[in-house]
Image (cartoon, rainbow, N blue to C red; front, side, top):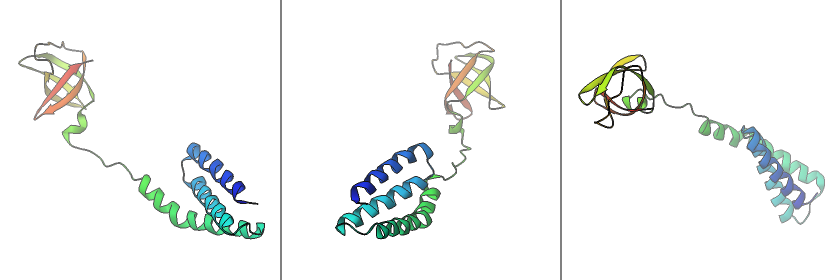
Length: 143
């Protein structure tokens, strides 16, 4: 079939992998590139040998490389239970936030809060976003 045909097939499979994202088509694209290289180095092989090279290399890629890539890229995200995980979340003001303090309901809990801008007063019932956690106090800014 020739190295050019295998290279074109590899590129098509690699582009299709972008839509799927399961590494299967990527492994077949890699096998097609391997077959193109073997065909080019062999100076044109019998089509049956080319298909055998593609079959063996795709089986090797699917059974050995794909599981490694799948484990590496599909790790579950670590659960962040620190207070820094609350940064960026929205909260509702329970008690006016003045330069001396206030309270918000954040993630089901009541927190002491202060405004990012010390001269700002945020009224009860308004929504705020947490910009930082400073000890037991949430530093917030108005949405």
